[in-house]
Length: 141
Image (tube, rainbow, N blue to C red; front, side, top):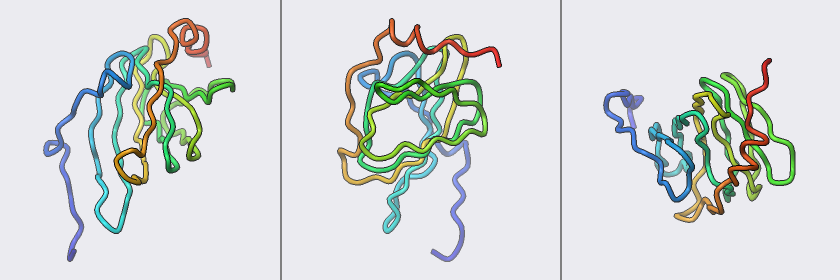
């Protein structure tokens, strides 16, 4: 490569995230895909209020950079963490977690992930609605 590559926003098609792995309306915009020798992908993920991922793990570390709204990330068995624009979350490999919007709020983050083969993510069951309602109320501050 002799120069930088610029991918305009208009050149990228936004897709709806697969309903099998998400609850609610979730949009994905692939910003960067792995190009050898790099394995890094970057995806802008926008969650409608109340939308979220299923419980899942990754083979590699995931970095979430919150860009707008109010969201959260929860590791199974631990209290959830609220995310707001500018917050950065590092999810170690193999950690069972979910992330998404809190009730009543739009949320977006950029997910950076190194891809190791087609089964880099292990998708599990949806976050139980009663559990989500109990933990996903946005704090006032």
